Length: 54
Image (cartoon, rainbow, N blue to C red; front, side):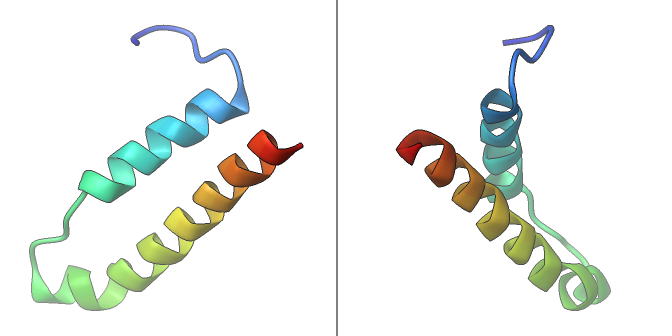
């Protein structure tokens, strides 16, 4: 788990796990950042789906 990341799929899986667990606490952070986080999560999940279907 800890150490060198061998490929982009491993990196993307780590990112998905982090983003799904991450929460913003303040009203301002939720307002300013949550939408972009969800957008990025969608992009990363799409990359993983594409790499598995190739």
